[in-house]
Structures are given as structure tokens and as C-alpha cells.
Image (cartoon, rainbow, N blue to C red; front, side, top):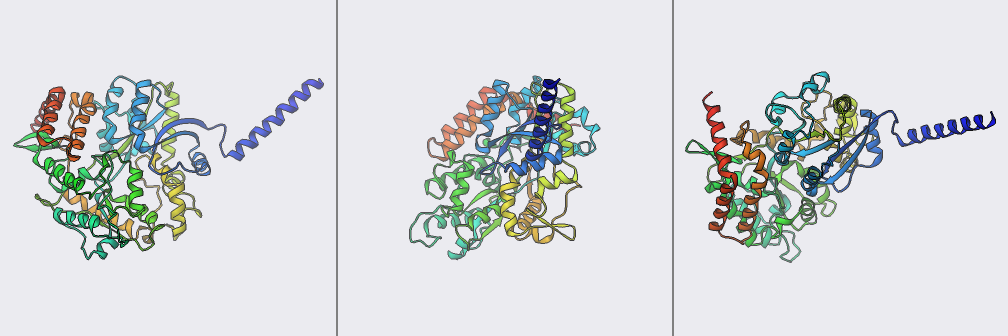
Length: 497
């Protein structure tokens, strides 16, 4: 009896300690554990206390592998090859083609039939869901984005010092970048600056946006009534020549092809480059970090650059990425429903605003029911909250989100929003949106490496234009010709409806 009572006492003591530890840790033992692989676009993952707050709000334990964005594609491919995916894997839109054959092979759950049972998920945009579909079936939840946030971000204080206006044409853009690199815009008496910093990404770096300014199709365009890939057009070659000129004249970092996004940002923040061409939404945080080194620094945002064919900008699909659900890691339908429940709850008022704005009193305050942020709060937001935005499903039209007050949108955020809206009037859309090419889905990612390598090599002066088109011919012979044929057949069927 004494031994039994002692054992009971010890068990109660340990149980109480366990309960106390769980309360102290902020993690409820009754919450289901969900494993996720998510890209990290910032320098570090969110602090543990912030993640605990999210877990409490969504009623789940989150075991997240935060993978630096520069290495994310390689990690996904490795996880696919080793069949070691987490329960939930985020995939960037540009990498989604890598996953489609895996989806067809049965590696991921089809979730479309389940969405109707969740009050928030059933409200997701049907058009965007269909964009992510594979053979008419829905396998993923999407993260939403505007049609295009692309443009040019430049040091306004450098322009002013050199008595230059913000460029409005491709010629003026070249002239401004050239003078950033040659005319000592930082005033230190040394020629040690670059016009822009770029990175090894032909889509989200400078190249594709510059291509818009030269009138290049967005992946696929129409020529004489037939679909053609962008790299077979004169405008693509014009863009390569422009970039080649920037490299040869040391206006852009000559190692851009192997430069990461983080290094690109450091070059601007440290005053070594006068800006970059890409996502305008990066500007507010970039300026905040830049002013830690140069308090008087200013940025100017430009979305309209006139080229030989006028003004235009390439547009994205309606989603920036998707969440996929592994059949190996998610054992049964009950477990899948539980994970979908987590995403559904993340769209409720408390977790949605937590993921969007952070913690009231720490990252924002409410003024007359609207979100207000001080400069000190913005700094905490960048560290604590910004990485968590990678977890947000949909987002743009969530009716549960609080409204920011006008001051929160000024000055650069308001300018980003204005130019993003303005971009909608001059979008260059991918002509293959909504069309299917089995060969592209099967081999498109592999074949695209041929063109990417040839493009980089031409810009860097390692091959001439004839050699570039030899690589285009290689692309066609290895399956590209079938892709062109299949897309054109699909286009004709759609046109004849």
C-alpha cells in the first residue's frame, strides 16, 4: 500500500510538473503537431515566443523547417527524391512545375473535395484555386498576390546629387545607372559604386522586368497567330544585350549570376549599389535598413519605363505559392482534415491579424479600430512577424483582417500600393495561362535550365548569339518542340470554343 501510494504521489507530481512545463512553454499538449517546410526570406526565423502565440491562436503545435529562400528549390527537390517531405510543404509558384509529376504519381492528397466543410477555406477564390489545379483537381492551398509589383527602386539622394531625374525610358535608365557607377554618387571620392545590384534569378531579379520594358512576351507570346516562347523573340535578345552592357561596363555586379538575394540586399544597404530592379514591395524594409547606415538616404520607386514598344510589365499568376500535403507524412483522412482545420482557423480574426500585424501593444496599436504602428514597432515587426507571413493562406481578401490607418500606408507603402494598382493597366500576361502541355509539366523545369544557363552565359560574355541559339535548338530537340506543339494545339482548341 505504501509503495502504491508513493507511486501515485510521484505520478501526480510528475504530471503536475509536466502540466506546468507545458503552460510555461505555451504549448498545449492536446494540440496536434503539424510539420511544415517553409521558405525564410529574412535573416532569421521568428522568435520562439512569437511562434508560441501563433500556436495558441491556431490551436496547433507547429514544427517548422525554416529553409533560406536561396536554397529552397534544392531542398524541395532533395525531399522529393528521398520521399522525405514534411506533412505540409510550401512551393513557390515558379517551382510548382517541379511538383506536378509528383502530384500525378499520387504523392500528395487531393484536397478539393474537403474544402466545402471549412467555413473559411470554402470561401477561397475559385479562379485562383483552378489556376493551381492539376488535371482539373485541387491539391493545394494558395498564397495570394497582386498581378504585378515589379519596378525599379533607386537611391533618390544619389539621383539628386548627380542632378538626375527619375528615369522614364530605357535610355534614361541606362544613363542613370551608368552615372551611379562612374560619377561618385556617394561623394567619398572613390569610384566604388554600382548602378544596381542583381542576383542569380532571371525571373524575380532584374532580367524579366527589364524584358518587359523591351516588349518581351511573358514566358509565351503570339507571333503570326502562333504561340512562341519568349527566348525565341528579338525582344529577349535585346534584353540580354542590355544586361550584357551593364555587366561589361561594371554597372551591375559581375558575379550577379551566383549572387544570393541576401547579398544583393547587403550591397544596397551598405551603399555599394544604387538600387535594384524587381519587387517594389521590398522598398519599405530596404529603406529602413539602409537608414541605419545612411540616415539621409531616400528611395524613389518607378513602375513605368518606356521602351521600343511603349510601356508594359509582366504579370504573375494569381498565386505566389502553394501548400501541398504529403500522402506519406499524412497517414489518413482524419489527419488531413485536422491539418486543413489548422489552415481554416488561421483565417479567423485573431490568428489572421496575428500573422499579418503581430501582437497588439508590441507590434501595433489600435486607434479608432484601425492598426497604427510606430517606428519602434516597425523594427520589431520586421524581426518577429515578417517571417510568419509565409504561413498565410490567401490573405488579400480576408474579411477578418483589421484595416490599417492611413499613416501606416505612408510614405513608401502607399507608393508601392499605388504603383501596384497602376501596373494593372499595362500587364503583359502569359499567353499559356490556363493551357496545358504534358511535356512541359513533365520536362519543363529540366529544359528551362538549358535556356537559363545559355542566357547567363551570353550576358556574361562566355558565348555569342549564335551559340545561344544553338542552345535554343538543343532545347527544341530535347522536348521543346513538343511543348510548342502542345501549347499551340491547346491554344487553338480554346480559340475555337
